[in-house]
Amino acid sequence: MSHERGIISTADRQRGIVRFGLPAIQVLIFVAVLIAGVGPLLWLLKSGVSTSQDILSGPMQLWPSGIQLKNIPDAWNRVQIGAYLGNTAFIAIGSMLATLFVCTTGAFVLSILRPKWGPVVTGAVLATLFLPGVISLVPLYMTILKLPLLGISLQNTFWAVWLPQAAGAFNVLIMKRYFDSIPRELIEAARIDGAGNVRMFTALILPLSKPIVGVVALLTVIGSWKDYLWPLLVLPDPSLQPISVALPRVAKTTEISLQMSGLFLAVLIPVVLFLLFQKQFLRGVGMSGGIKE
Image 1 (cartoon, one colour):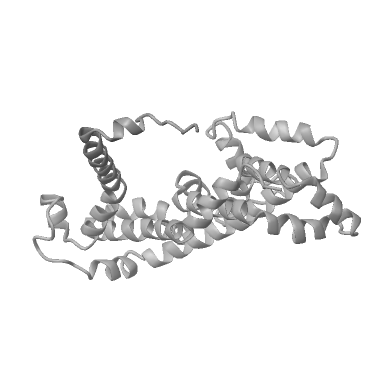
Image 2 (tube, one colour):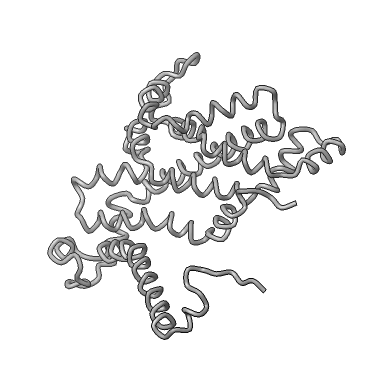
């Protein structure tokens, strides 16, 4: 009977130094990863409920002047963190819906309908991944300032953020790959039953693609939540700016303790979203390579 062999054999594991040393090394690595991942969040929380003097004089000390819980409501009201978080959530949800619409419909055409010009479009979409984003920044910005044919400006509107976010080549290609893995027998059976393209898309393809749709939605929300440069360019109006743009702007006139509270609130929401949906996220990543027949 053959057994799988790893880096450390079964015989080596029976040795005392390996039997006790390996778990100790694993624990140390786990603690190091935990500190690297959770440590900054805990420090941000500590700083968010500390005084400005404590942050500057003793950044690693635990509240020499006591816990300042009032920092969080002060940041919410005085710095208008709540309004900026509302803008950020609205931008993120709009970007998610626009992205899902574009990538699912585009992948459906390229993978399920398979027109003759499909490979050309797929190659063109793939080619855009090799272009640095900074190259298209100026042309895209000029397009937002004056839309072709319509001649209107989208600046200071959320559409200026939603539309460019929706046209992401990576999301289209990863969705297309998932659609490619759906058995063609199911598609042909749906056609035989008289299902049209719209019904096939809504009643067959989308229900089978819930894991990858969830992954794309979560990645889009997190990416939109932390985006800085593009919202800074197209949303110069402070009342429309997301938290990522507003915090650096108000930092010049805000106490550092309130800044830390605002940063903690801004970071907390995407972390909570990932923790709540990590099962669906990891499942979608694991299934992105295909569907078992």
